[in-house]
Length: 425
Length: 116
Image (cartoon, rainbow over all chains, first blue to last red):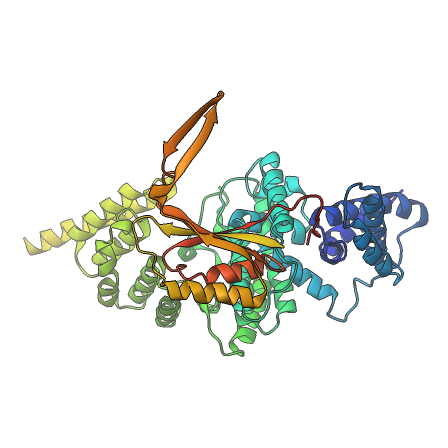
C-alpha cells in the first residue's frame, strides 16, 4: 500500500515551496498547480510500489516539472510553449532540486515571490487572502471555501479570477524592488493578520478549521520572518499573533460563550506561545524601529505576563496606546487608551480623552464608545449620566451576550444613582 | 506588454494639472521608450453614445454612463509588467484629483505574450 502519511506530509509541508519554484520555472500558476497535482497522484502509485524515496520533496519537484513538460507538449496553439519547453528541459537536466537544502536561496526566494504575488494590491483583498491561504498553506479549494464561509463554487471563481488576472495583466512574479518593498510588505502583513482574524474573531462556522486559520497565519508569519529576518514589523506581527493565540482556549467557556480578558482563567493560557511571542517581540525591539504591530504586541505581552487583571501594569499599557495612536490614529485605539487610563486610576483624564469622540456622528452607534463612556461616568461619580450612556450602548448592540452584560452594568449604575440620592436627601 | 491608461477627471472640477505638466509627462514617457500612443479627449458635453437594440439604432447625447468621473484621455504604453504600468499611472499629472484605470491591451493570437 502507498504510504498515505508520507504523501500527505509531503503535500502539506513541501507542496507550497515546490509550487512556488514550479511557478517560476513554468511561468504559469495554473500549469504549475496541475503539474503538482499530477506529481502527487504519481507518488501515490509509485511510492506504494517502490517505497518512499529518500527525499520526497525532490522526487515530487522533478516529477512535477516532467508532468509540466508533458502537458505543454500536449497543448496546441500555445505559441510560446517552445520557448518554455526549452527552458524547462534545460532545468530538468540539472536533476533533483533539493527542497530541504539548508542554503536559503533560490528556493526561499521562490516562496517569498509567491507571497508577494498573492498579496499584490492589484488583486481584490478577499482574493489576496484566499490565494495566500490556498497556495502557501496548501489547502484545497473546498477547505479554503469552508474556512471563509463561502460556497466552493464561489471560492473556485474567486481563485480562478485572481490567477487569471495575475497572468492577463502580467502581475510580476517577484519580490518587489526596494522602493516598493516597504508598502508591499505592510500589505503582506495585513493579509496574514486578516487570515488570523478570520480564525480568531469567528464565533460561527466550523470551529476546528477556523482555529487552524490562526495556526496557518502564524506559520505564514514565521515563514516571512525567516525570509525577511530584519523586518521588525514582521516580527511584531508574529509576536502579536502568538500572544493573542496563547489565550485561544481561555476565550470560550464550557458552554461556548465568549469570556472577556478580565474573566479568563489565566492558567489556561499557553505558556509556550507566550514565551515564543515575547522572544519575537524582543528580537523586533532590538531593531529599534517601532511600528503598530510591535506596539500592539507589547500591549498583549503585558497582559500575557500579568498575574491578574487588577495587577496589570495599566500605566504602561496606556502609554503604549498613546504611542499607537500617534502612529495609527483611530477611534478604537483612543477608546482603548481611555479605558487603560481609567484602569490605571485616572478616570477623569480618560473622560477628557474620550469626550471629543462623542460629537463624532460616525461613532453615534459605536457600542464600545458608549460602554466605555458610561463606565468612566460611573467611576467619576456621575451615575445619572452613566445610566443614559448605558442606554445608548444597549440600543446600539445587537449581540445578546453583550446586551446582557450592559444591562447588568446599567442596573448597577441605577442602584448607585439611587443610593447617592438617598445620601443627599 | 501594452497597457492602456484611461485618465479620469472629476466631472465638476478643473483639470488640476497645467498643460506644461502634461507635456512633461508625455516627454518622460517618450524618452523612457514606453510611449505607444495617446490623446486627450474633448469634454463630455461633446460626446454622443450609440446603441443598437433589436435592430434599431439609438443615438443619445452625452457619455454612456452617468458618473462622477469622466474619461478625459488615454495613453497606450509598452512596459514589462503591471508594476511598471502602475508606476506610470501614479505619476499622472492629475492623479491627486482624478484616477487612472490601467488595462492590459488584448493581444491577438499573432503576437502572443508569455503568461508571466
